Length: 178
Image (tube, rainbow, N blue to C red; front, side, top):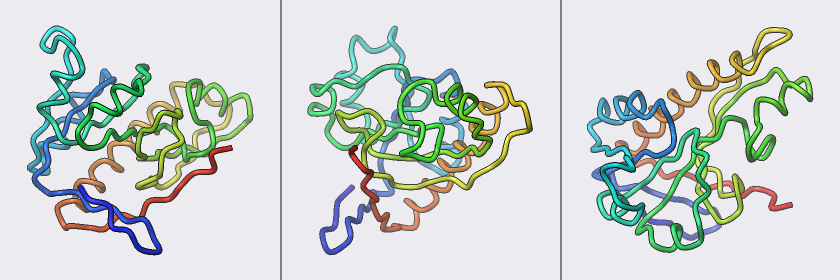
């Protein structure tokens, strides 16, 4: 990928990149989406790789989804390209853990997903893409949010991959760091 500096912060990804996935029990489903768009993809497996650095050497872009691991400054520094995260809300709202619980407590029935760059501050990296929004039923349970968000996140990933193949220039949107 390369960042194009002008008045807008734009990023272009090489259509021949190798993806890595980390964090989710849904990684096989995400891998199938990536493979269906003719990209290479490897899932991080603690048994197969002795550490993250050995995994990092095989991939260009790491996608973190439903991941409970917090990347250290060393991880971010040692990774050769970019770590991206698919977050279960439209950021900056509901950043961090407990997204769905917080949505329920605050009576928010609008669900979405955000693809953003991972930085040392959790869920505060520049936004690459947002999903459309969807509504959950009245009196929802966390499971209701999860099911809708999974569908939106997969759709967001597929749209992202299609845009990469078309050499799309993504405009990065900074988040309010406060």
